[in-house]
Length: 125
Length: 189
Image (cartoon, rainbow over all chains, first blue to last red; front, side, top):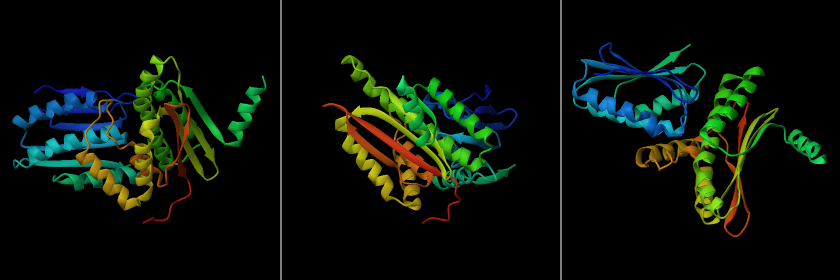
């Protein structure tokens, strides 16, 4: 599987999608105007990964901000991961948030209510 | 020459710290966001407030990018110019994020209904509405998810204040104001 490794920019997050090293992470800020265009290759990568996944997958979200355009795409990512989990795949979503960031904590809780996947809400300093 | 002083006095009286008037693209909104962010860093603003203000700004600016565009196309065909305006104010009790842009008058009623609906909802109601739109709604052709106004209401914890003024027979000016309080909110229903 190819690796997606994108450095963060002013308005897009850092992405690591590396099946060989078991690393699946989206971190930083996601505020692109056209999030559909940005996240398209990520969604396609997940589709491809789902045909031959690792024994288990821990997908990590560690976001500082995300705009509403991204929020829809994040749900799309989680929905694809949910489909894989529903085929008995061992999946865990880790949603990180800073201790004083109630909004990010709430967002994680809401996503965990919208999809049927084990969710871990993790406080980071 | 007096207009310079007049504008300066208005900005001071409304406690405006940043005003941008002109064309709104992803590129220049990044500049505005960066300026506002640096400003809040310099004055040592509390993290939670910084984040809320930033989130509201992003949604407000990106709304203009997405929706003012539509009117620009129609407008330039008629050789008119309707740029938009964005501003941030800072008072003792918090921030105000405000914007204004031209829009087609026949879209006003639908927008008014949406804003009234959002304002009628409490915290729980907004959460339900947000979840409804994010799961059932689809992206429009400009990359919008239809969630911007709801998110602004949620993050600020306040009602969205708005106004419509007729510009001419075809266009109206839509003004939107969101307040972000820096006074710790007690748990609201």
